[in-house]
Image (cartoon, helix red, strand yellow):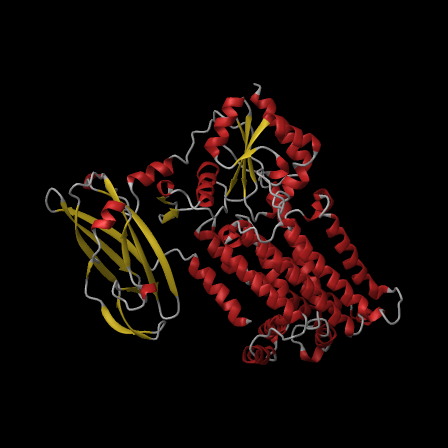
Length: 640
């Protein structure tokens, strides 16, 4: 399990690193009227390799492809390249030709009889260090007239800049300041979620039996340097700090790019990875194996805890975190996934969630040291702890399919339609009910132990009702797939059957022709709060009527994975000075939102006239009353 977590961390830290292993620049030098010398120069960061065009492994060989059909058919030979190193490669376990630090590739091209103002070349390559490999493709739009090359970055062309500028609109507005109210509500929710997660972790077999042992230690004054109350307080504080500290690396990702954590939560491969990991978590909770930290690490921490003083108390707290990992790890995974889902402030949310988790886990140890007489109220360990652990396994199994659903929605696979997802959850929770009822088959008797099984059975019936009427299960909006994502064929892929557009220009043109206002809806397929707004707020009759009669909805999905048309793809230099590729529809709308509204979270709603006048301050996740008032204010402003 530790290897899986290390893999996830290396995946995140590598996939979103601020510096690419290889950067490219080109030069086009005119030889005569028709012949040009095209040169690509690669700079390779220290420790990485770029492979030769003549690598015996086809998958890692560098390849240059001319994307103009006439030019591609006329040029078949490989580029001339600088002399590669031939040496042993640790990743592929064989001798390979590769380049370190820099490489140069050049070719003479003949443009006779070709009426071209520019041509495009795609470079397909891979780069590896001693442990990891990346596979990249970069496309260069090369103007034949050298004066048209941009001086700021040869990777970005004039054509790219035009497309980039087309995403900026001269909206008529006052300075917009997005309210932090919705974020505050979300922070409270995630803190409460952390408290609940910590409480569940406290009741697991890995942690619960340690409560009386640990509290007894703090009551033994002879072992303590600072006294029982101060030592217990430090112990609880260190537990909180350890779990909050686990969230700090994610703030680095947030600082690199405001869209990174959103990209993590909506990435197909990340969601599939979470699906697999949560299946493993579930199997572990079912008792087939334990997820453990290596004993050498636990023993090292435990040995330092015996030294006493503040350092000793810290290592006691760390030992608890390490020993209990087999039970807390899956719960922390749920907290991680819930915090990073579709928010530009995901790292902050994760820290707040970890704070709640640490407080809930550490506070009981401290309070019981203050009031040891209440130790007698704690029930003895027993089979109920095992049943709780298995119950958590079923919950982890249900959550696993939520991640698979995210990947299905973003990838538009059509595998986990709403009805299929509900049926899978029905089977999971019926199985959980049977697990709790199985001990009552021989002696039918209702008691306190029957409550979890009865609750699972009732929840299963509740889910079944959603197969007949969507409104019955709107409490689960954001967890279940959207209401319009069903096995029944429907041309309308809009929330609640409303009329909507998924292109800004198309929607705005329709609004102009029909003299309607525009509701710009920045959303996402994997955005849970977007579904809650659509199914629980938009569905209210007073709001639905306004949306249907007064507005044209333009829903822009920032995690839409569909490829842009070739001529619509472009690159631009972001605020960090990095060249960002815009190849997919969702990337385009994400850039559109950030450029015009300096926001990267969803849902994000803008009410505007189709001419470009913004009517009120944009709003995010809101209550029914606030959203209704916001729509009314926008309509009244449009009449002035």
